[in-house]
Image (cartoon, rainbow, N blue to C red; front, side, top):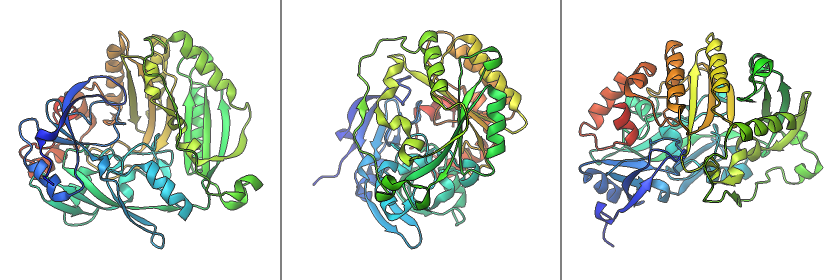
Amino acid sequence: MAEPTADDSVPRRLTGWGRTAATASRVLPAPPDLEALSHLVTGAAGRGALARGLGRSYGDAAQNAGGLVLDMTGLSQVHRVDADTALVDTDAGVSLDTLLRLLLPLGLTVPVLPGTRQVTVGGAIACDVHGKNHHVHGSFGQHVTSLDLLTADGRVRTLTPRGPDTELFWATVGGMGLTGLVVRATVALRRVETSYVVQHTERAADLETVMTRLTEEDGDAPYSVAWFDSVARGRAMGRGIVMHGCDAVTEDLDAKQAARPFRLPSERTVTTPPLLPSGLVNRVSGRAFNELYFRHAPASRTRSVVPAFGFFHPLDAVAEWNRVYGPRGLAQYQLVVPFGAEDVVVRVVERISATGHVSCLNVLKRFGPGDPGMLSFPTSGWTLAVDLAVRPGLDVLLRDLDEEVVAAGGRLYLAKDSRLPAATAAAMYPRLGEFRAVRDRVDPGRVFVSDLARRLAL
């Protein structure tokens, strides 16, 4: 069989999960044969090449206007699970969902889980994803013991965190796919006794109380997160629901749960209709949702044992939920500011509440120390994320918020970004010069490129 070439690619309109800033790329399934894949990379001309996984970056990180986009999901083999050492050797195109369904019955789990399990291993490395346990277990890249990277010269290099190519390893972790194609990785796992989580839930009357409860409980709970109301004003501004959790052990389960301690949910989902009108997410609907969601939580602290899939990934039960925001899409704005800059978090919530830009999916948590990734997002401090429907005036609001974040020494998450100016990104990421130096060395011709990279001059 003839090797695939760029001529076999299919023109396709691509967006991120936010469904904004669409561009046309030439999409081709990445061949599992590494020699064939190498030929595609070294033969990429003009607008270069880029890896794409399951398309869950919100902005333009997995788009390459006019260039080649390699769909990595065909690299889907899990090569080995070593239960004794708790390591998995897997292709980069394997999803976290697939890994969890394989690993949990073996008493193992993925060490860091982002808000969706519909993410590939390669994407998790490129974005250095984080989860509810960052303050304890860090981000995904800290658990990668080795990775195979196909670079612009057609070579496959095996990189480790402390090996001879340590700089390239940490430029790749969080490097948004711009150092090469991650084709395979070995990831250190965590051991669990069940597929359940012990969850503690409580309401908090305002933003100050939300932040206080997160601070008080984080030292004792490996999982920590809060939802807050972005619409309420006055004394109720930022009221929320604070959730802490830990992996359930066998003794935590009731009789029904104990009969199937590693029960996995169905792979079936409810799918959002493809054609929804603009304006469904507005001040009225947002206020109603925020009120109902706040009231559904118990007024006093409660303890429950819940399935891990629901605890970590509640939105995965609804396929294509991003369609609810209508044809103009949404922008997720996720920031981190250092501890001591709590006033910035308060002002951001105040500004969103006052402007009428509505968000229903609002998350606040605390990060632990970051890893050595040059463009990795997490760093010690407060992280806040809001999903905002695209509507007139949003760009002005977000530019104002950018100034607050930069002044506090914070940054935005590149995997969520769709509109940040290059100068602002440079101010937020002080190690950008180091990243560029590594990239200049490993890919001087800029074979690997994306719309994000062009926009931010990465």
